[in-house]
Image (cartoon, rainbow over all chains, first blue to last red; front, top):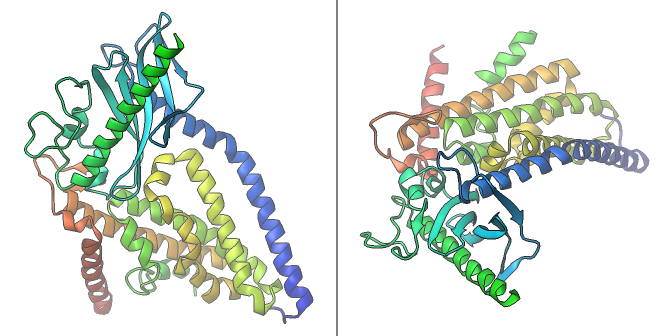
Amino acid sequence: MAAKSNLKNMVLCLFGTCLFCSAILGGVYALTKEPIEQTNAKLLQDAVGQVLLRNADNSGIKEGTEIMEAPDLIEVDGKSYSYFVQVENGTPVAYAIKSTVVGFGGPLTLMVGISADRKLVLNTSVLAHSETPGLGAKCTTDEKFMGQWNGLQLEKTKLEVQKPVKDGIDAITASTITSKAYTQAVANALAAFDTIAKQEVEND
Amino acid sequence: MTKFGLITKGLVKDNPTFVLLLGMCPTLATTTSAMNGLSMGLATLFVLVLSNMAISALAPAVPDKVHIPVYIVVIATFVTVLQFLMQAFVPDIYATLGLFIPLIVVNCIVLGRAEAFANKNSVIDSALDGLGVGIGFTCSLTVLGAVREILGSLSVFGWKIPGTGDGMLAFVMAPGAFLCLGYLMVLFNKFLAKK
């Protein structure tokens, strides 16, 4: 059974346990640091690849193009956005913009692909969300909702959730708030895109 | 008690979910589908076995007045190790379970087994006890998750039953969790009483 307590052994025991546990944690952290970074980088890359121009048979990003991460963040209305540029023969053809809004259950982070001529939303991909399972969380699985963003024509479609749908976005059943947040995230990405485009014109 | 008895005890007679009603928070919150329940159960099992072993080895040397802080530090260490491993190798599951992984630190089952069993028994017996209770918890969560998934989204382990619609959404949300848990508890205890 447990030892009798006195100040000395209590202090020693707590100190020893904490020291030992910290050592273990330090070791495991060092071992898993690289795999964790690799996993996160791969998730981001996959998302970027998903939303940019792809081969006609959907087998990967379009051949002959290169993806580059933009060195600077873009600031619009106090929010900052990181983005990637897809370049073909030295001209940008598409942009992938990371956009975060507040959803129903917390932050909702999307990667939004926009063509350089500002005509199409190429596709969207959810990077992180905390929406209700079975309801808002369907924004990552619902084919009907997700399909709308694949090649969405910005000239013909309004970026707003409509009921009934006329020329806007159809919401996920019973998840209007999530759908609205998702649409807002795309609209924000588009605003960020406009700022990027403006900057590039000024730099030229 | 036999070694085998140590394992089966946690599965049936001392089932943490349906009999002892411990760890209700993760039980209700993470069982939105069978897969989520299973993952949460396995994560808890991992921490339970290791912390039980470590605590039973440490217990004789720990002064009585500081035993709770020492146990919590040990448990928190294993949970953090688990977090690192999950982030590195199963990021999808880690993203789904989110906050509930770090919250294993304060799961009543883990500290409960440390207090009630591990600090008085040998390392091997404690490991078996942790294994038994962990498997019991995993099975309960998987069953509860499966029932909620079938009723709520008409699918089994993520496989959608063909030709079906949306299911009863209430079962995926919090009220459905309470309802299912209650009925499963009734069934479980009726079955136990008959034996």
